[in-house]
Length: 193
Image 1 (cartoon, one colour):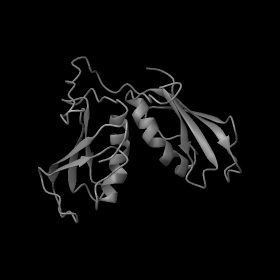
Image 2 (cartoon, helix red, strand yellow):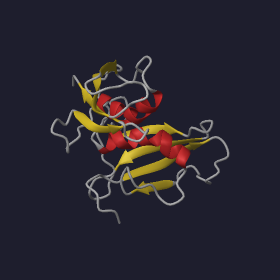
Image 3 (cartoon, rainbow, N blue to C red):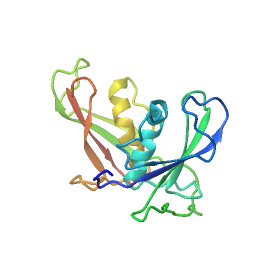
């Protein structure tokens, strides 16, 4: 049992179209205690592809194009051999359900800002106060790939309505840290709802 303020998640294998080295089969269900605690021997390739989705769901993101807005499909990064449905569980371990938005008319990408809030000798020269704008899930031209990789889960979550309840401004998160020794820390902010 994990003591965490974050919800449990359920992963269900919805499709198998190749050899899975972990032996997952269609219909298999995996319960995660929260987005930070995968089960023993969990596939790290899947964890890599899945993380932005379970992070977003954990902070309230909704996907209005889905039959259940509190779920999303994730494909195995190893040739798409498997497809998983990720869902949030409520406190009674029941799947949270919000029906598809009947007014959904297509993507509604959000404008977001990445800002350096801590800097210490970045090899790319990023410094305190530097800012970049992006819309939706678009890559930022000439931006550090390692930093964008770390910021992507926050961008993904915010783009789909996440709220970071532990932040002074729940429409932002100011702890997105560079993997290169933590030399740079970013604040990622959704500028519009």
